[in-house]
Image (cartoon, rainbow, N blue to C red; front, side, top):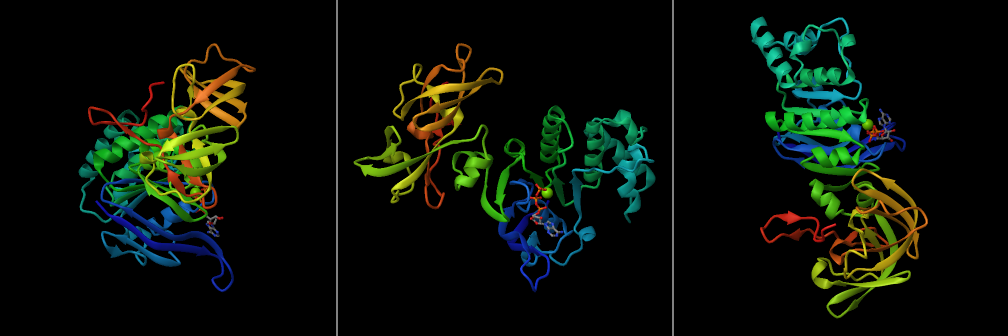
Length: 388
Ligand SMILES: Nc1ncnc2c1ncn2[C@@H]1O[C@H](COP(=O)(O)OP(=O)(O)OP(=O)(O)O)[C@@H](O)[C@H]1O
Ligand SMILES: [Mg+2]
């Protein structure tokens, strides 16, 4: 078990005399013992570089990497006791699954006897449900089975840390889902602190204890999946997390008694001040509606803005549909439940609860109001105050 700290960690590539590429910029991240951290962000934002600095494959230009309070900047990768799984999980083709799994243990100077190693190989194979495959060669395995062997090789020696860099990127969608659940279960079972890189926000939301959202080498937010979804620190996080994309509209805002009055192009509504934690002093805001928070007005009378949308496309996704349309506010995307009687050309009347409306400072992009999670009477929290 290891507590990881990144303290002001910066990585500049290239000639330090000239202006280099700042891959990671002044990063502060704290991962408590046993926690599952996901590094999330677009391509080139510095995820892999951050992971490699934790693993000791890359040395920070500035700042400290600490394991349990001890600075490890100068500790070589092989002395950090870290297991890494990468996207291209090369297995040794001439070795069986069992030999691939046991290879690290046989090579290391440890006190384990051959029998003990065999027992450990069997134990890990059972955990990953590949015990039937121990005598097969990698060429005889499916992609998912190979991935399990790669995971097995990482966990067999119970390292201090697991580091994963897009380990599921080469697998098909179905297998990705199965494998990410398995990684999640496995990590909770063995309780080893982990850092996992992905640019897939859905993957991040499902497996993370905490998500670090990066953009251009800088930390945008470090929070639980709930926090980054409901209280995104800024517009970047709000747009990167959640699918379909959040609807965003320009508006002006002003105080009116106990409420803030929000004026959008052709729609106005009030947000009671009790729903807003920050004091809003700016005039210009961006108003955000998650597609899932928009409701058909014929089913719901809400206090939020009401607007009509001309449907362009209806995309069924099982029990609901994603509807894209045009309104006086601008283009709108909504997720609706009762969609079978809807088609292109129809008009949809939409509304949203003020609790669910996001507000951002138009100039800085910082969050002014997040999506309120309403307490149920039984004390459990629900993100939905309105039944769809
Ligand atoms: N060895 C290197 N030399 C020079 N520049 C590098 C090196 N490694 C990474 N970079 C640059 O640093 C930045 C961050 O790269 P990094 O690989 O960490 O991004 P990433 O978030 O993992 O992206 P992806 O999702 O595409 O894998 C990029 O601009 C990249 O070009
Ligand atoms: Mg990468």
